[in-house]
Length: 251
Ligand SMILES: C[S@@+](CC[C@H](N)C(=O)[O-])C[C@H]1O[C@@H](n2cnc3c(N)ncnc32)[C@H](O)[C@@H]1O
Image (cartoon, rainbow, N blue to C red; front, side):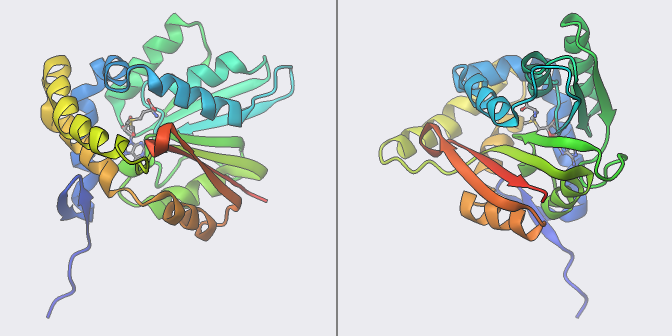
């Protein structure tokens, strides 16, 4: 008997691990131009509040003190721009994302906002960045798309300085009775339909919704952070568990 090929989830489908990244890349290539608009429509603007909670936790210094942030799977630069706005002149922001189309939107946004943000095309599983070079590493709604999550966590740990802070914002499991049924109905019916109207791609948004359901529950993800070496690991549920903000330190 031959060795089973390793498989993983792509939404509710099981796919060879080696195929997942290309499938994910197709999703984001398809939606890049309307990605930010869709975030506002899907979440009723709530994603802004979740990202503000992330930026508050990053807490970039207001003054000249040097502070280097890496935003992994940073896509259109939404988190990067918020951190750049919140930080002082010493704050230096780098976005790494595997998708050229998402990065292109981000570069345009940074140019329009007159923000000097570095955009790097890179796989979170294997970063072309030096060890211990960032004070903070963030990833928002990105980790569940990465095929080898452990590899990405190991890379985030590697590029953090000692004393550096890792923060991850990700969809989670709704645990408020009543809200869970509404959330299911909304996710599986409204979001793909909205995706079809706004981006012409209902399947991309079906994947996004399904991938949320397949992502580990926050307690298990917290353990994955500990296994990657992070210390003082904690998480906070936001909006009845729609989203969780995870935190860990390289000490
Ligand atoms: C849902 S978007 C999140 C974008 C942004 N962080 C935000 O919150 O608006 C997910 C992003 O993950 C990126 N991504 C997927 N797999 C990746 C990988 N292996 N390495 C780096 N980025 C990846 C996608 O290209 C996409 O831009």
